[in-house]
Length: 251
Image (cartoon, rainbow, N blue to C red; front, side, top):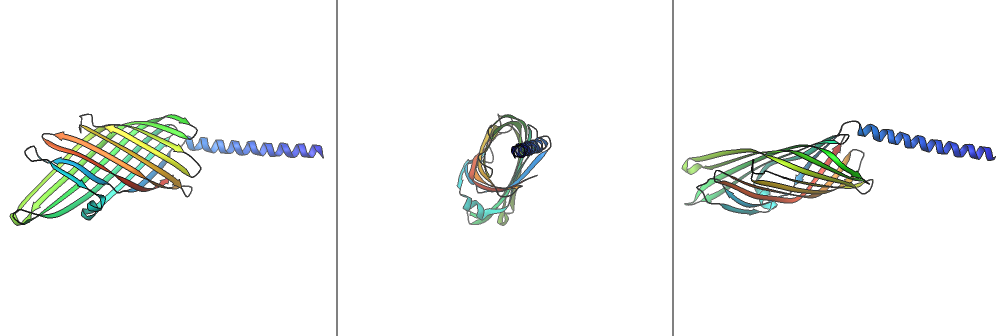
C-alpha cells in the first residue's frame, strides 16, 4: 500500500513537471516567433488652438467639441498595430479625418470649406524592462503629416487649395502592465518635432484593456495629441484630446 502511494505521488509530480515544461515551451515558442496585433479604434476628440494659414492673414482661434466636429465629419479612420519578436518591437498608427463646413461670409455670400488630415506614425524599439507583469518599450521613429485645405466661394467664382506635408522625428515609450488574466493597461507617450518638421509635438495615450476571448481585447481610454508648427509665417498650434474605444485582434 505504501509503495503504491509513493508511486502515485511520483506520477502526480512527474505530470506536474511535464505540464510546467510544456507551458514553458509554449511560452518560449511564442517569444521566439513573430506576434502581431491590430487595433481599429474610435477617437472622440475635441479640437482647440490657433491657426494662421498665411503669413499675411490673421490667426484664427478655434475650440470645438466632438459633437460639433461630428456635424462636419465626412469620414474618419483610426488604426494602430504592432509586431514583436523576442524583445524587439515595431509600432504603427494611421489616422485620417475629412471635414467640411458651409457658412455665410459678408456680404451674405455662401462659402464652403474642406479639410483633410492624414498622419502615419512608424517606430521601432526594444523592450528594456520586464518584471512581474510590467513591460517597458523604448522606441524611435517618425510621424508623417499631410494636411489639405480647400475653400471655395461659388457665388464669386473663387477657389483656393493648399496642401502641407512634413515629417516629425519622435521618441516614444510604452508601458504595458498585466494586472490579471483578463485585465491589462497601456500607457504610451511620445515627443518629437524638435524644429525639424514641427516646432514640437507630443501625445499621451492611456487605455484599460479587457480580454474576452483568446485573441480579442476591448480597450477604452484617453488620447491627447498636441502639435505646434510655424513655417514661413503659417502657424498651426492645435491640441486634440478625448476618449477612445478600440478592439484589438492578436495573432
